[in-house]
Length: 268
Image (cartoon, rainbow, N blue to C red):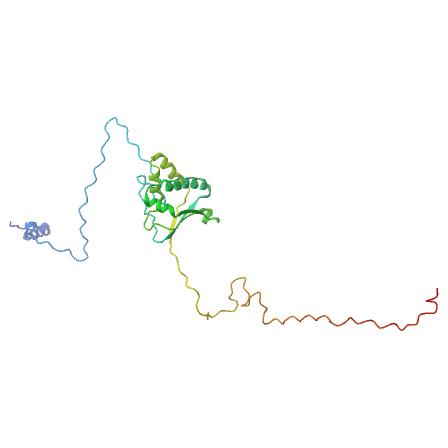
């Protein structure tokens, strides 16, 4: 194909561009070029949109939306909310802290009663092994912001087992309506600060050798004396004087009187 320039000076730039385009090879025979360094990469083609849901048949009632259970730190009920990460321990002993709202203590203990009953009735060997070391404790002192702290003391643990409450409750209570009521009791009573802790036993060696640490004056624990036991006398206090012993000889007698009785003292 041959391209010619027009004779109008005003269109000289456009004609030059057309001529340059015609001199290039066609796209079918063009050699692919690597992108220049720093140039933005081409985005991949967009995925086709998902097919819209089927429209209900005329006259059919709309499907009711399934109620969603609120998310809980201790695990979600299967099918009601996205499952949370499994709660498992990596040590022989574990703790789960459950901060409970003070006004919802009764609801939490009621939900806990259903859960403990589910542990006892479970036929799953794994759940029964978990139940062997599962104990419930309650802190005497109030927690932060006045919460009541319930502690799950698990000793021994089942390594790698899921200690979420949701799956165990779902197995024991297959009725969805009853399960939702129990789960609501639990989720409405606890705060979002539920936490898990794995505990590993520590073997403390016995003390060996004398202590030679530099000690500052007065660096003693409360209630301790200045390096001297309370039962031993201080080396700077003078000893108390010994008591004077009592005489052991005969008691001295008074000397006889030397006075002369008067003349009329003995007359009758």
